[in-house]
Amino acid sequence: MSDMNKLNDTAGVKRVIRRYGFSKPFWDGTREKKLVIQYCRATGKYQHYPRPVSIYTGRRRDIEWREVSGKGEVYSYCIAYRGLPAFRGQEPYAVVSVTLDVGVNIIANMMHCARDEIHIGMRVRPCWLPLEDGTNLVMFEPE
View 1 (tube, rainbow, N blue to C red):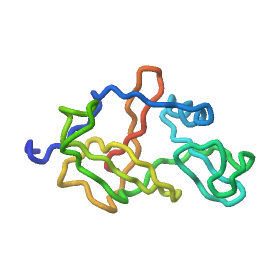
View 2: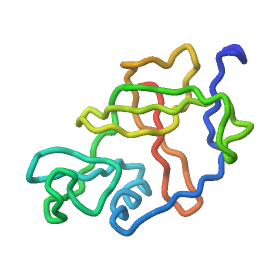
View 3: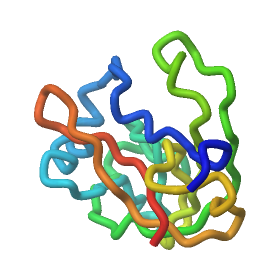
View 4: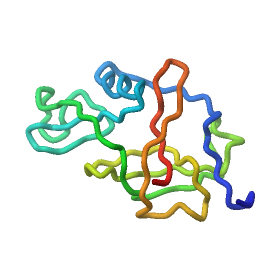
């Protein structure tokens, strides 16, 4: 792959992630490289990012956590040529919005992919970036 086609994986970027008590099951799942997201029992729909209540009913009691495969397809993407301070020097890198097979979108970095390979509709699977506290950050790579 030529340097003009190379995307950085951003694996070396030090990340500061805010976590909230209601997202604990999500982060606990990442310790085992499992994608666990919220499911509303009342409506039969998934939601992500984690929230304290169902976005469909507004009730906490309707939420449960379910493991999903994390496979899906690229809905949209952006190639960053100028990063925020933590990402400066890592450009270019790709940020993707992935529609999971269960119908909910997740935004993350794309790994192990060249610039000319990434496209809308591309099938992807999760891959995991280890964090210092033993959790892992979900990212995506070509399936």
